[in-house]
Amino acid sequence: MLEWINRISLLWAFVILFALHALLYYSLGNGSWFMLALLAAFVETGVIAAIQAFGRMTRKSND
Image 1 (cartoon, one colour):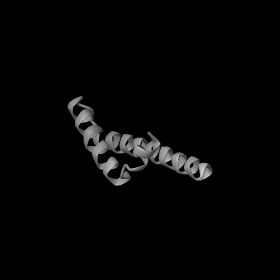
Image 2 (cartoon, one colour; image 1 turned 60 degrees about the vertical axis):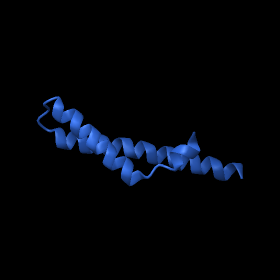
Image 3 (tube, helix red, strand yellow; image 1 turned 90 degrees about the vertical axis):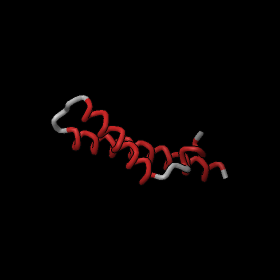
Image 4 (cartoon, one colour; image 1 turned 135 degrees about the horizontal axis):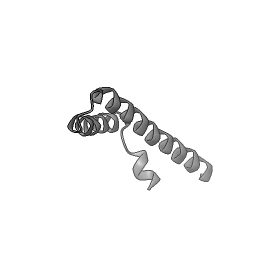
C-alpha cells in the first residue's frame, strides 16, 4: 500500500483535491468556499506527503 501512495504526484493530488473541495463547499453555499477548499487541499496533500515520507524512511531502513 505504501508503494502505491509513494507513486502519487503531490501536485496532481493538490489540484484534484482542490477541485473536489471547491465543488463541495460551493454547492453547500458556503461564502468562503475558495479559502476552505484551498486549506482542505493543503492539509490533505500534506497528509499524503507525510505518508510518502514515512514510507520512504521505512523502505530505507528495511534495505
